[in-house]
Image 1 (cartoon, helix red, strand yellow):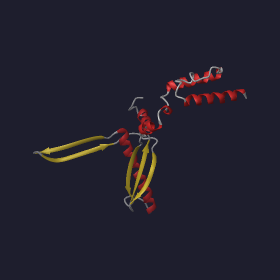
Image 2 (cartoon, helix red, strand yellow; image 1 turned 90 degrees about the horizontal axis):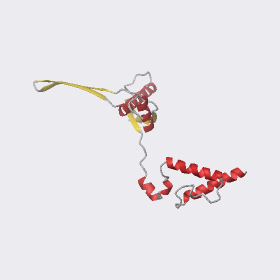
Image 3 (cartoon, helix red, strand yellow; image 1 turned 90 degrees about the vertical axis):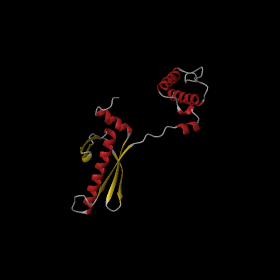
Image 4 (cartoon, helix red, strand yellow; image 1 turned 180 degrees about the horizontal axis):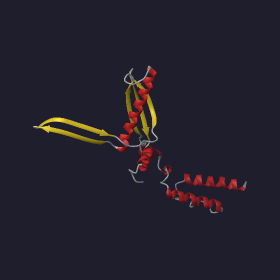
Length: 182
């Protein structure tokens, strides 16, 4: 019972100490007769505060709203596919194949964003006239953890699929493939 009371009192002291702006540390906010457990808890709080950035509570609310960083955007890939061009015995089978094709196209788009695209090109000239022009694009990489954001019918004969990756997942993929340190 005495331990619960001490912890409750310690929590109240630290909460009050956190609300006031005068003491710079939790230890400075302790009362003169604080017991050893309270002092140890205040020292732990001060040690943790040194490791983390300053709390937002010390910044006025209006300043926090105005200077809040924008949320980190996800990587999104979009794919489209036509239903009528898909193989299948029935319309429903063709729809499922179109969704699958659009999903793979969206994953290709994500792979291009994460790993880049390799382009190769050849052009031929004869008598200062372009006789041939070939361009080849190669997207190669590994994608893990992509989630489907939406599958939307477009018109009467196509589907749009949007897939997404969080920035943390992209960092993991790059680290796992050895393309980025850290």
